[in-house]
Image 1: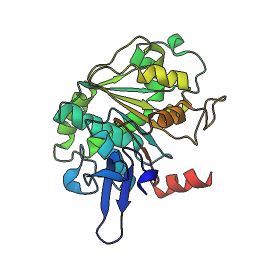
Image 2: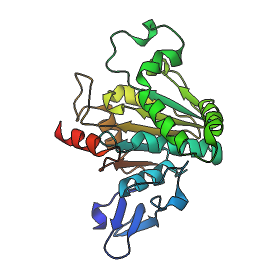
Image 3: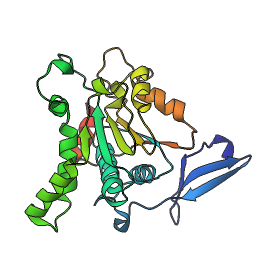
Image 4: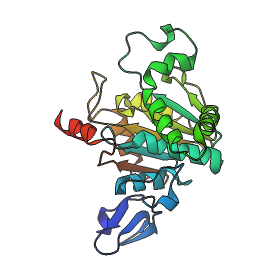
Length: 262
């Protein structure tokens, strides 16, 4: 069994008392395991978010692990990839103060014109593709019921001061230090584009790639040639990287059925 394991792989036993762990080291025929934090329990919620299934708990363990520099989450729409990444980023920016801010970017496919021809600032140019970010920020802000409308408005304004929306067109040559970098729709990137983005990470920066391999919009890319598939494969077994394939949709029964049937 140990021969089939790799570093940072998750193992679990759900018969009797549930046991969830992560492979930290492999020594010959022995594997060193670390017992995971149970994010399914409300007392361990992250920015008000509690995991709804096993894979979400695995994802939060990676997202909140200071020793894990690169995280990839793959799954169909509604599995909670963006919500979990944002919740973990906010908690570690505002509460743990591990990061100075969150950088959010995504592949802008399809695009009729290059983003440089669109009017406005960099964030205004990116606005048409930032619906997922806005929707998830609304969900996270709504979870703070104690503060009332005024409290939520103040929290929302504070959150937005620490989130930067960046275009991939302007990433080359940049170095991000102590940032929580989220790359959304990463399945639409080529391996070369993925390398360009991940190598922007400076000291103290965590990179999180989100995507759905079954939903590639770039015409010449396939599941096998996508930059997301490429980076997951190349980082497999590196002790500072982790990957979770999200299995269950949690958005709604309609979204779950549509993802399977259409």
